[in-house]
Length: 211
Image (cartoon, rainbow, N blue to C red; front, side, top):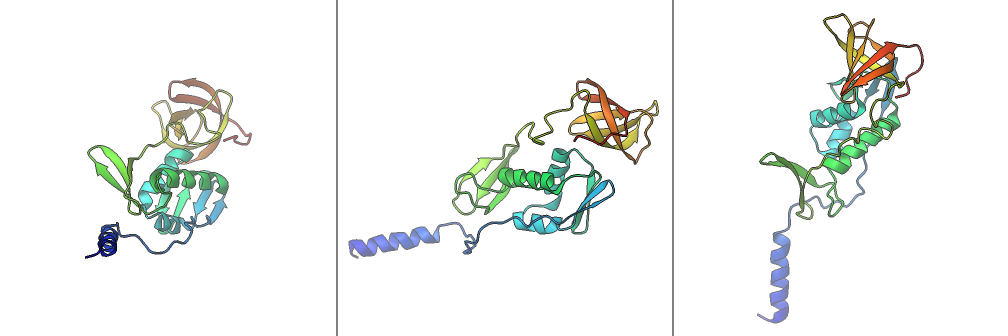
């Protein structure tokens, strides 16, 4: 066998050992969100189309969005219903953040990845270049405008429970928000009057929410 033949034989062997990836080199594009706002709720009507493109479990993407957007919500068929009025641009930003964190390979920039558990660590493995890295979820990256609640902020909060004293209890980002005079199952505008650790106290207001 000549040197050239040796070279081509090694090249063929190397190709056979490459990870299997789709031959298509089309540009990776997340579907444009089909968002409908109904009163104080926001509906993502093509949510499953998005998760299918990302090749990720809908529940995983949904839990990330709910945490980052600071709102309750649920999956109904192919759509997601958020219990707050949220702009399409804000939702799109969070889906892009999810994609950067849980989908795109940091080495080759391709979306041909899968998530695996190594012990207690979640690792992103790239099927295109073979790279793997731990998934690092950025702390405090919930929103460009959500850098933490401050006294004086006016927020829209869903009252998901009622405390022993009859005060309404909701959640905003990772804060528990207590708003006296509210009823479970309602969404209200509240002005933050006091914050202690991760508990915020608010009073009902008719002003538009700033968050």
